[in-house]
Length: 342
Image 1: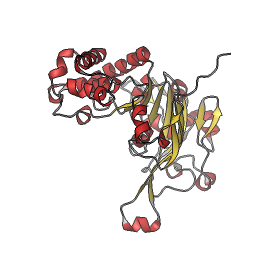
Image 2: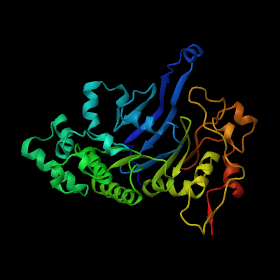
Image 3: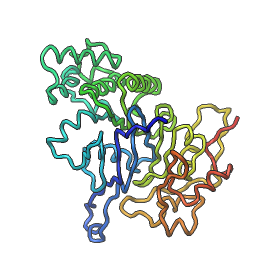
């Protein structure tokens, strides 16, 4: 029997709270609960997709994992080391193993630096190469991501959006990381370019044995690249499972609503919908409701949901759900509004 490999990344009860700038809110003791107790793992060579509405805490989670935002509570373990307890000197070498590719490639690049200087900067910071060796390494990285090494003398304004994002990927790969946070890494690109960059990320994962935390809001894109998918709502995870299992049959009403709202680019396909459509807005992170946070918008909400927050537990092997009535969602075909019929 093959032993399960230890996770490369393990996030335990991660919390990121901010103090409100409003004097009235401070008197009431309100905090902005951007992330309020998130736990997950990423195995070597695995891609975990993280989806949810805007403002649910996805990007903050990714930044907290990288220690770009200091967590309020919880821990982040990378390759057996608690990075939340690491000091500045210890964190610098740890960053070699953890890199990021952000949403807007133009904002991620210094407009005054050439592409060669941009991609070579991490090599200088971590003292990995210098002189002609660094220049050769930069050229090799550009070719690895599908760019011509002649672009080394260009600046970001001279490149297309897809080329700039490839430069950002090359920069992330410069220090030979094992784990990369892709924060909406393709959402700012044209659809055809998105496919090219996604295929590039998958190829690099196979060749370099990379692990990804892929944060996105386009459900079809996340499904294409992810091995597992975690669904986030109002600072909490509400469901996670293998990608195909989750998309074929969600167990949480919020996941149902997300999948049912995803458009299908075929006028001959009629999407089935949940019994009752989800209405209203997500709760304010400064004033979350008691009990289940999805209760005010949930078509299946009952008194137990308002009084008691459901635990995020493993209901089946590899499937985590935070819902009192997940079995009802699973067993009632009419509720499963994620399918499509012709």
